Length: 207
Image (cartoon, rainbow, N blue to C red; front, side):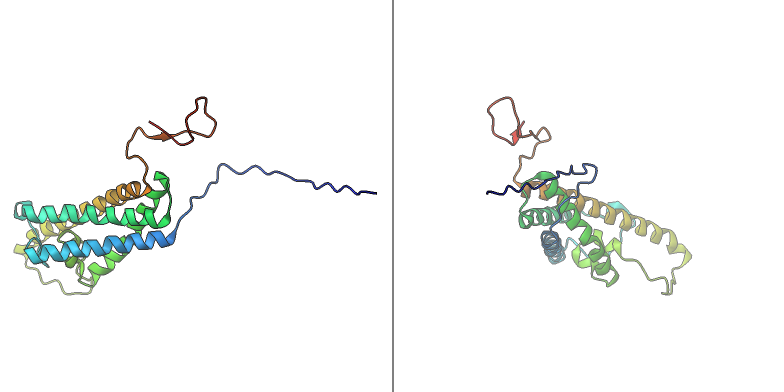
């Protein structure tokens, strides 16, 4: 006599309000190291050709030369484009959103490293703008004459503005690099469609 066994299967609906993003830390750290390496290459090249000077402060933007501006902008942007691209490729994702997320996280990982380099006095090797991430320790003696205090304040303000610009350029570059690494079309009109479609087009892309 055959015996019939019936198993009860209970289907649980997923909580759509909690959808965690997958994060590949291997891709994030490879992207962060790639960005720091290329940033160092740009910084040392700028020092070699005279675009950067270690310890130089600008009391006025008129003292900021065009070649220094070019190395600062392209160095900050392209270094993190490489970092975002490397993070996306190592992660292996083909979705632009996930790839851009990994690029942004790689940028976040580099920020504490840049602060450490600046505190150790090595920020100048990465470029003039990153020298603004370093400040004199609070316990160091400040023997600045009153006549130079206004000039020093302007130099500190310009250094902070340069460091902020470099960080924001790096963030934009990491997101763009992650988008490039995903392989998806780099268009703001790009979107995806679900599996069920009315026409005979394959699942995935529409413009």
